[in-house]
Length: 275
Figure 1 (tube, one colour):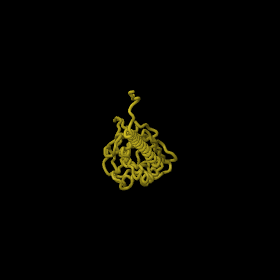
Figure 2 (figure 1 turned 120 degrees about the vertical axis):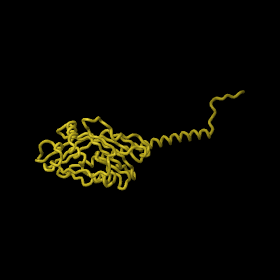
Figure 3 (figure 1 turned 90 degrees about the vertical axis):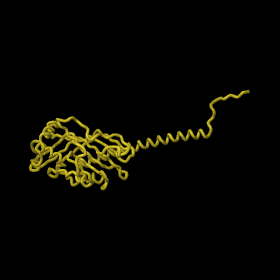
Figure 4 (figure 1 turned 180 degrees about the vertical axis):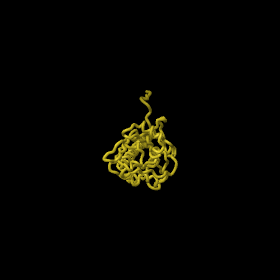
């Protein structure tokens, strides 16, 4: 009687082991991929927290904590900050000079809220790039004598308790490179571009038109760091070099632009641009 083959030939032990090994390799690769994605997602959240914390501390005039907790450590190569088109700061000391000795005058109020984040974490996990729109208000009180040292257009009409007041709507774009140091994300390159500004009692188009035709007001605005005690104007230190690029606040004679560029996915910092 002739025997029949009732099914496919049974796998040998070697074939079964090879199939299991291939499946295990696929699972290990998938786990590695998911772990990498989880790490980058966690890094994105950590980076966003760094910048949010920056704004909370800055608006509370606690800049010494920004220096110690959020910026890269002294001696870190390549540190930079550009706040206006006046120039860039390229040493740890000159960058920190902006944060040093910021007073907390009575009656001064800053409120900055963050929106529209675009954050890219490098594939190697060592750096990250982010850009945000920051809007809010900036305001304070000056004695009439100190207010006279600033352009009259910065202030509201009339006084409060005999003092001059400035109350501004403000929108900026912040673009930052972050560096991971000893397991913590730190600010490495910092760029601030003012999108538009206007006193509370004037719209931003009218204010921009006024700024465009008044060079002394433009110079004052570009060099102003903050209003200090009793509303004293405090100006930016001399920059270390020319600006990395030019980005204009709103003007009636210019179209909108995106400068510096938005972050894009990248593998290592060497293949991307610097904010």
